[in-house]
Image (cartoon, rainbow over all chains, first blue to last red; front, side, top):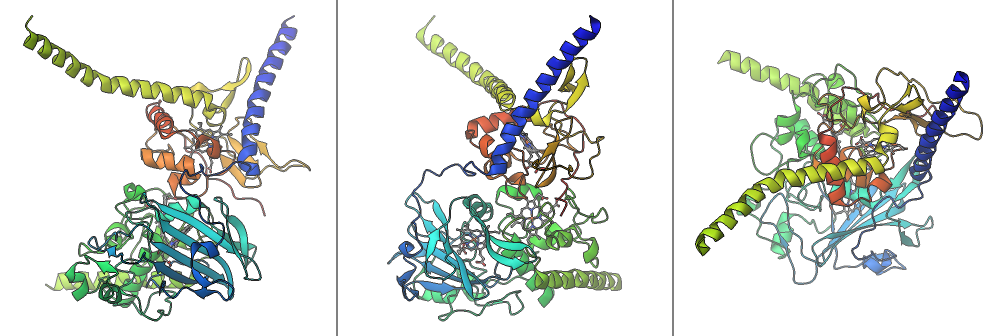
Length: 372
Length: 181
């Protein structure tokens, strides 16, 4: 009798367990099969179905870009696995950007921006931003067909495997929530069209610096053509520039601004991490130096070595948490966490050089102090 | 009672009820959060199963504390065709094409809780975007964020408020293991 009771109980328990597992597996199936819409459907207007309809080109058959759009190139571009990029902006006729806040320009309703990505000379995608009547920005990506004749809207979830990068890796077109992970991480959703990025005092050592399109769309050009109003006079007189102890430091801080500052800044959602890699026009000590050099890592990421206790340890790139994170593409460790599948070797070399040199500069400062 | 006095009295009563309304609203929010965590199946994966007198049952002493740190798992499950996934007896370690994922510690433990430095906004964003802390690495299966992320802001705030005040459990959940290849 006792054994029978035990069996019944065991069976009951087993069933409960099976049920629990079945529920879990049912739920498990959803993300696995990717059958659910990942992003809650945005209520706003739908983006045009083709790139042609966004108005980038005056003649789509010959891919003639509308002459009224301005081509521009930020001095510290984002690294996207070696993609070649082209960018354009279009302001509605008679409107201008309000530049009175040097760290967050305000763009008129109807502003459109495009960014084209090409790999190996082949257009792969073109991203699109448009400011809506309610002030929100519309996000869209268009994937080019292999023959380069057409570019169709990509689903809100993005597209993996858009272009092979070798070694089993490939370029992914980000989904809309990933666009927003970068573009909504600070005060301005436009990232590359800003005072520092369009400064006429361009950094000659910026990694992956691009040739400037003609005409050179910089602060002077925009103000002279009435496209930018309210820019503080001080910025016209002394164009924005990262104050640094050396050219390597300037370029390294610029790289961090362009590649990390949209998430790591003191205004956005991640401000509680206390890591500020976005250059700010206020203050004298660059925020990146104040918040990273000699500062402890908040929490070690999976795969980070235990001796990397500081974000940046002067003279020791190998023991700097920040270096380990930009030198990795293991998903839980890598920085940035999205938008790239390959380590940026040029940037690694630059940041390494700066960290080695930072030690030297520190020692010199120390010697000077002693000498006084 | 003069009219002026009754107005004053009424004002005093409403003022004191306004003071009371806050904790009441908070309690209601936490209660709602508890309800959502229950029907949202969070315990299914985040509370380890332990063998009890009636067979495996959720170990409520370790409620919502994720995969127990003392149960070491070092490699993905080896499976015969056509199986693609497996899980541990605690129902907190998950093997599949993504490698091995471990259910996170959702308790407010200041050292080991995954939410220890999440703001409310980051919690909401995490479940909407499927990225750690809203903007970081992709959250692995089987965490059903695409469905949980359909909750309203109010509901997600309630879940967060509830998780912030459950008993903290110190349990360092292991890092995910990448796929074998």
